[in-house]
Image 1 (cartoon, helix red, strand yellow):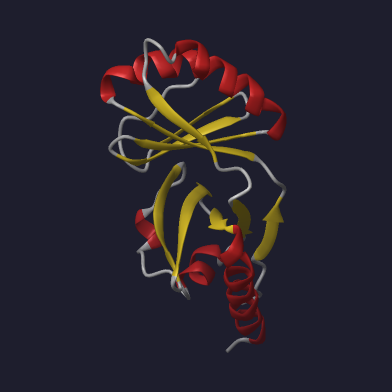
Image 2 (image 1 turned 135 degrees about the vertical axis):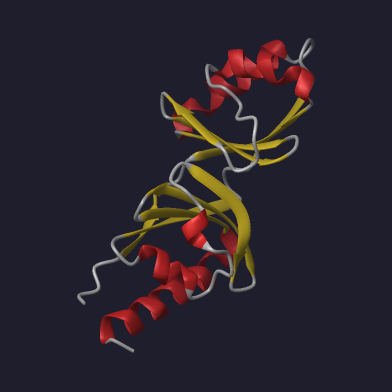
Length: 170
């Protein structure tokens, strides 16, 4: 079998950690023009924005870097009536995309999660080797890892080493 799975660094993006109580979800969804997903690991996307629910009151919002001020302004406008916490985490993380026929197998070399259970359009906080990452399955054979900047070389190096093993047939 030919190994055709690729690893690429994704260009910088805007990222926010968004926290709010259930009673404010509708107002924030309206302000963002994007529905905050109701279930953990669900994702919603529209107009270049993506929201992934990580916990009972926690979402990660990804957008273009140019869209960040519009998001901050939209949520600031509803803050008095819809309390929330919006924290810019853009500089904290970097992202890697793994795609190809053996993407799932490649990620499984260092991720204990059963990736077959992670359906396209869903994401989770998990561990890659010893590093906490946010892993999103973007398509059947395409994944995204959001990694704290300081751990990026470690995770990227592990993926490259595993990739070389797959290529050599080990």
